[in-house]
Structures are given as C-alpha cells and as structure tokens.
Amino acid sequence: MVHNNPTPGPVETQRDWTRTYQALAESPPTSNTALRRRLLDLSRRLHRDVPRTQQSDLRRRTEEQP
Image 1: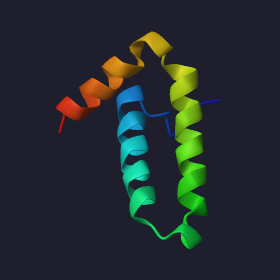
Image 2: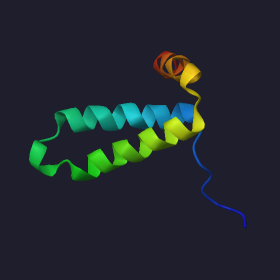
Image 3: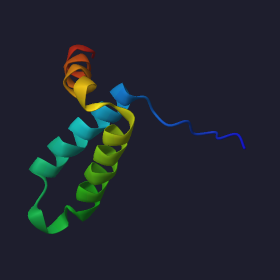
Image 4: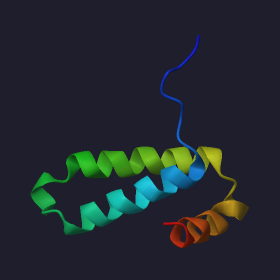
C-alpha cells in the first residue's frame, strides 16, 4: 500500500511539537484539549522515532534552522 501522506521527519515533528507547546502555553485552560492531545501524539512520535541520546541534538538542530 502506498501512502500519499508520508510521516514527517523528526525535525519537522520537533518543530510541530514546539509550536504546539507554545500554543498550549498561550491558550486558556478551558479550551486546550485538542492541543494537549496533539502534544501527546507528537511526543509519542518523537519518543518512538528518535533515540534518547539524539533528542537534545534534534532540539538544537530545530532551533538553528529557520
């Protein structure tokens, strides 16, 4: 089976995680369920795809790239 929507790479997933985290920090506590679920999903994906020893390097690379 061919997928038309490939899974984004770890750098893009980390960027999405950062954007979602920032949005969650700015959202009112009464309306953030979707953001919390998205953050959990992205966290699981990063945990699954990126070895723990490389996670800090991934965050650093994400911050360096525009």
